[in-house]
Structures are given as C-alpha cells and as structure tokens.
Image 1 (tube, rainbow over the protein chains, first blue to last red):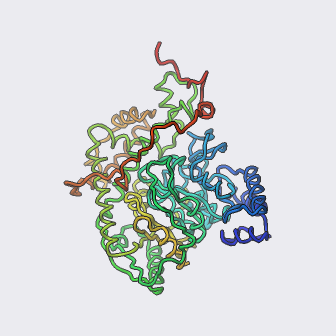
Image 2: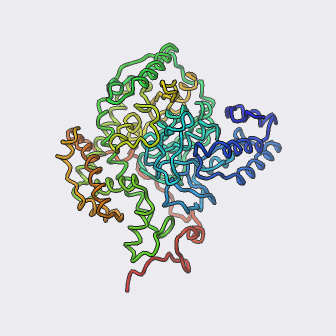
Image 3: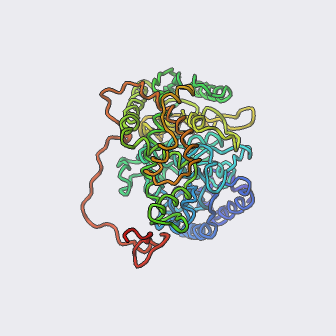
Length: 475
Length: 104
C-alpha cells in the first residue's frame, strides 16, 4: 500500500483492526518516507527506527491476541522536549546534545501505554524559545508548503513532520503559542489545552506557569485521538489538575455550532502588522461559521496592548530560574578545562546555550533582581490577573473567542527579525497562556504565496471538547 | 513605543549587563555585553508601557489557578536511582559528582 501516510488516525485504527495492514507496515512506510524526505524538511533530530519496529511488532502481536486498544500500533513522534528513556532528549540545545534521559515523560509513558509506536524526536527552537524553529542547535526546519519558509515555532519540527506526512500526528508544547502558531504556519490543527490538563512531568521546563503540552495533527479528529492519550491527572506534576477527562473523540459532534456565540475582539482585528490576506481568510472562515449557525458578537478585550510586555517579563523570569539547573555538573554540556567552579558554571552555560536563550535568561535575571523585582516581575503578575479577568468577563457573554493565530503567514528562513518584531508576532497567542485558557488553531485557507492561514478559537477553562468539536464540524 | 522613548526610559549599559550575566552565571565578553545591552534596552523599552496600567489593589497572578499545593502522605515512594542519574553526568567518582577543587 503506497498511501498509508494519507490515512487518518481513525482509518489507521480501523485498518489495523481489520488486518488490512500491520503496524510494522505502517511504521516501515513512515520510516521510509522520513529517510527519503526529511533531508529537505529536517523535522527530526533523532529517528528511532529500531525501537519503532520493535514496538510495532509488539503492537501487531497485541492486535492478534485481541488485547489492543484503539491506537495500538499507530506511529507518533514527540517534540524533543519530552524526556524519553534511553533516547536522546536535546530540547534543541547543544547543552543537552549528549543527554539521555533516565526516565520517560508522563506524556511519553501514556503514549507507550496506549500502544503508540514512537518514530523519533522532533526539532524545536532551543528550550522552546522562538517562533521559527531556527533557534535550534540542529539547524532550521523547513516549512513543507515552501521549503524557503519557516514552519513556525517552537514546535516547528512537530508541525513540519505532520504537514510533510512524516508522522500521522505529533506532540507539541505551547508556552506562548508554540503549538498554535506552527500549526497555523503549516496548515494543521493544534490544540493548546487548559493549564493543568496535560502533565508537565518530564517535559523540559521553559516557563512553568505557562507551559502546556498538546496534540498537533491534520484534523481535529486526529487531535482528539491524541488528546485522549495525553490528558489526565498526574501526581508527579503538582500543577496537574485532578478533574475528570472527557472522551474527546466521542464528543467530536457534541457541540452545536448553531447558536454558538463567537466573540470577535475588535482590538484583535485592528492590530498594526495584521496582514490583509490573513485578516481576509480569518473573516471568511468566521462567515462560514456564521452560515453554519454561529452568532458573531463583537467584544472588547481591553488589555491587548499589555500582552507582549507582560509575557516577555514573566516567561523569561521563569526561564531564568528553570534554566539554573543546567550547570555542567549533573548532566548536559560541560566546558573543557575549567579553571575553577565559577568558570565551569559560566563557560558551560555560555558555550552550551544559544543566543536567544541567553538573552531571555538575562532579561529574566534582570527582572527578578533586587530593586527591579516589584517594578517588573510583580507588576507583570498583576497585569496578568487583569488579562485573565478581561477574558473571564468576555466569556460571560460568548462561548468562544475568535482571533488569527498569527498576524502573518510563515516568515522566510533567515528573515532575521529583531527580538521586538519577533515578540510582536506572538500577540494573538500569548494571552491564552497567561490566563491558562485552552485554544485551538484550525487551518482556514492560504495567502497568495500558497502559505497556510490559521483561525484560532479560544475557549473557557476545560472546553477542549467544545473547541475540537467546533473545528471538527468546520472541517 | 518609539525608539527615543525606549532609549529614554531604559538604562542598561554593557557594565550592567556584565553584572546580570554574573548573577545568571553566564560568561560574556565585552562585545557580547555591548550587543546584549543594545537589544535588552529595546526589549525593556517595550516593557515601560506596563507602568501606565493601574494595578492598585490587584493581587499578582503567579499561576493560572490559585490552587494550593497538593499535599501527600510523608512516605517513601521513590527508589534509589543514583547510578542511572549519574550515568549522564560529565564527571563522577565513587557516587559523587566531580567539580574543580573549591577548598584549597
């Protein structure tokens, strides 16, 4: 069979159950595609062919024995931020180029328990800091729609791999848009769940109060299958919330688009730098939802201008603290011939971290340092609460909020935007992380360069089923 | 915010950046410190707009949910993984992590 890579998760599951093909055949098919195509896309940092085939054989045995579950034998690939026992986990950094985790992240363990076959680990911006996947020690990943453009970031490897049919679905993480923006740039569906819905255990931390893992796939339906695996309480993550998990697949038609109140924040559509074609495609998609019965309601989100400064204080502050652990002593990169302990710390970190990571560590350290803590960090946390309240007020009168996922389509590789320009590109995604809300990207068309445009729907807390359902019906 | 505003309100020079780099245990040369000073000034300039937002009486939001930390029974639930954990360390000896001599 030549087109196994075009089958949806439901079709793969059905085909395996009906013995139309085996997990080994699917796995080999994907591995061959990776070998043939990934030299151009560069989405994988590590391909785990041998392990994948062993897992596929075990899956086939389990299918034969009648002990398989719905996803047994289907391949997945993980963003290289999720720790995988016995397999290198780099977070896109030279710092972790030699790091083999002694344990699995909970998300990885859940995937194994569901019988998923791991194809490998996917490229990303170093420690998830970036919006292009160019900030990786392993080089830039290309956008499969146009290899001269970036796939977005930081989960750019995940987006590119799925868009190029080098994995049927993939895990990503989203601290400020790192699932939704690459999904938008690569024409995929990507869900950032409510903070606390997916375990962060074994997911290398960037900004702990913002980080959240989620699924990236070709459709909302495929995302729902992976979400059923990823979601759930984990005692190993103290911010994981003990709350019943939905069956996201069963709920795919559970929300009625008819009568759904979609809030259109007027501030969002007047942002300077919003590309006219992106705006047009997003408005067309909203018109289509209106035709399906949704009610469009203009709303106010008054804090819009504060998003970027608030996020770029809080995220680097948390990062500077989280990244203290990389000290050249217990794991990761160590510099050659350190003169003393201080030299060992400083050179290991400066030689091991890339430029953007060091920049964010510096901002964060400054914002947390004596004399600036209240003026910068605490102030940002107060504004963060106002941003959250702004959303909660909006959800009193609407069910979901619509926005573009990014103000533009994918940048050219090497566009070399200044940090401030780059940070402004995150305006539509970061507030969701600050508030801890769930949000989804749905592909809604292309610009005149044939690059994908994404619609973002933001939901109230724990409304993942609703978001997936609305996008599923739209698709 | 215009560039002149940013220059007006931010006050980082290469020397301050070196001091922050020391706190963050990063080793920067003079050229790098000067470069970072320039880009950090632009970034911090962008932050100045937060000062105009009235946050009187607003409680800082540290995490999306103000949940208390969950507590668990004080019982041993992990086994010893020292050998596994030290297998990825740059230098170990007899179960200890090795670093350059600290006390003469």
